[in-house]
Length: 165
Image (cartoon, rainbow, N blue to C red; front, side):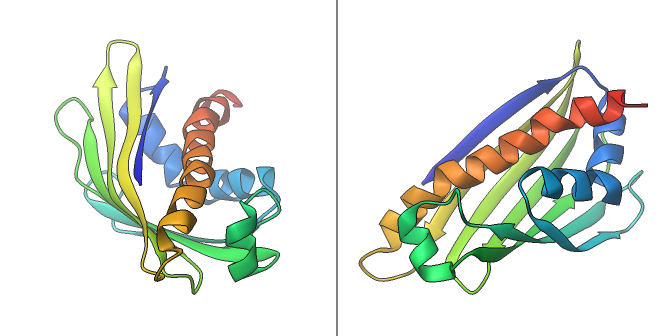
C-alpha cells in the first residue's frame, strides 16, 4: 500500500530537523497518542548526515481489529530515519524504515524536507507491506491509514513545538 503525505510548515528546515531530533519532542508526540518512548537515539551531528532511531510502545486501541488480533493491546514500533546532510538551502532527504513489533509488517520509503518560500515542506513517500500469507494485504491495507495518521501528526505538531518557546 502506498503512503504519501506532505505537511507545509512555516519554519525553516534547520528548525524542523532540530525538532525531529529532540528527545523531548519525541516524548511529547508519543504521549499524545498514549504511548511510551522506549528509546531515542541520534547518531551523528544533525548539522550533517545523521540517523535518528525511535522506539515507541504504542496502544493498539485505535488500530484496525485485524491488526489487534496479532499484537494485543500495545505494539513496539521502531522508526529509523537516515537523513542526508543539508543542501545549501537546508533541504534534506532521508531513507525511512518502520517495523511493527514482531509482525511481518513494515514501512520503507523516503522522507523529504524541502525549503519553501513559506518555510519548508515535510513529506513522506513509502510503502506499507506485510509478508503474512493470505492476510498480509489486508493487514497492510488496515495499517496504512494508522501509520499515515501517525506521520501526519508528527508533521502537524512540529510547528506548535517550535512555537511553544
